[in-house]
Image (tube, rainbow, N blue to C red; front, side):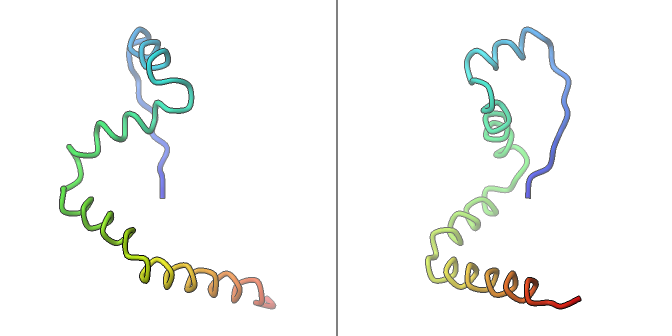
Length: 76
């Protein structure tokens, strides 16, 4: 899940980001810079390993699709 964050930076810094990184890519660029400073490396490695586990990913997809089906069938 992503969260929206509002930050204040100098206009010249923003212009530099906009020119070098491009519109629509600044958030991702900043996240990649900040991530190693705020998340333990082990956690990032664990998430990457889980994403590479095809059986786990298939099972998770089936589970989430089943939940969506159940929600759509609910006659509340």
